[in-house]
Length: 457
Image 1: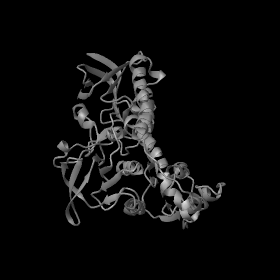
Image 2: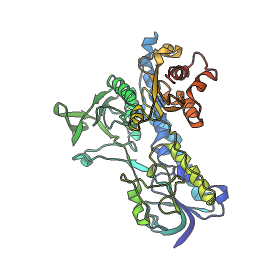
Image 3: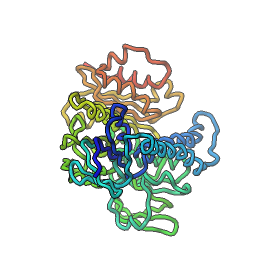
Image 4: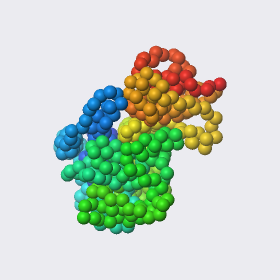
């Protein structure tokens, strides 16, 4: 049985852990799927490449209000798809080749691994190995809800829908979160008739309530949005799929050529059988870690979707750097910083958020004030003729420290960055608004005016 100094399970952010300082270690890297993990292959990178293309496809429809006649001639789906994956697939294969063939101290095992005990792993290749240190970075996979006959109907998840052979005329999306909202934007922009089915009364219900309400309102004007629906059964038809629903008006059905299940993701801890290693878990299956990313077994670290509260690549990358340091410096360990974790939804309109929602502030009993600023109230908003976007800030009225920031509208993921910086470095709202120049007339004036409008003590 071969023994290693370090075993890393998962090749997403975990693949960045080995450094030159570990050149003397014998390292095993285990991967059950495509090298590079979720973000590179089926997550943030390809989806945002599709989103950017969708933004271009949607632009002509928005040009009329600006006095420009424009039209979309045709969407060439195979060219769009192949442009994206012809860039991504070689990166994945190059990463695999580099680790497998060009790192003398690294051995790559490709199979579905699982723990035998706290130091022993079945690699899924027919070989069992042991290790002094282990990093669990095995990510997550799409959740498939319990819907009658779904397994015989045929459906896609975010792992497969981007590689469709051809663009469908119609698509049903079951789900109301960021994955559902981004793909609804992509496919509707390409001319697909999109139906979104949500169990709750809002899309993106985990966002600040006002943001979720505005997004749902806008979405209803673009897609067939069915709220408060329970999907009870799936049925294969001659032309695609039919879903049977229960809703406010009783039973109903919807049909489309293709079906996308986008109801969230679940950690791969069950596949790894982490209980065999004695790892404590949360109720949803995530591996429990402390602030140093250590599990209940001190020689085993975990990071990313398999353990984190946040299914975000930038969080997994941060946690990987922490683990990397702590492996190399066991007597000088550092902590992960999850104080102000931002997130964005790359749909249309974009959404970006950081910190507390107003609802969370109320629940925590925190004293706070809010201010909102519409894109339509700033000069660049006039230029874009944006009528739905706004920024909402939440702050401590006595100190002026920002508690949360939420933006819905054009380039929200970029516009929010100075607010993330202010929260991270303790810059109060008054100092931020008045202590620097704000370029006029640029979109960040949205942030400046929102800061100035906070009713601070």
